[in-house]
Image (cartoon, rainbow, N blue to C red; front, side, top):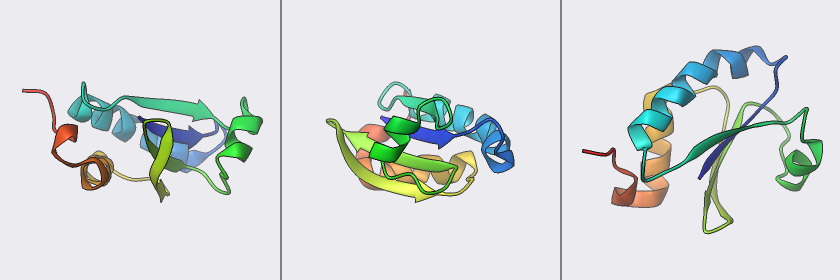
Length: 93
């Protein structure tokens, strides 16, 4: 699972939203992507150690695998996931 930690007031977060959606389409069904509003869920954000947004955290079996800071295009998001999860994160055919 890849989680996008964001907030509604964050301009870069809003700019990245369509790219995150494209990445979700490219990675489905092997990887699930979700968005977590840091303003609405500050306790979860604090537990995850979020210091700045947007922040992407990749989880496998409930454990953090890697994180990526800053707004990114879909291709970068997909490459990040594939780098850490390997061939199982390939797009559906």
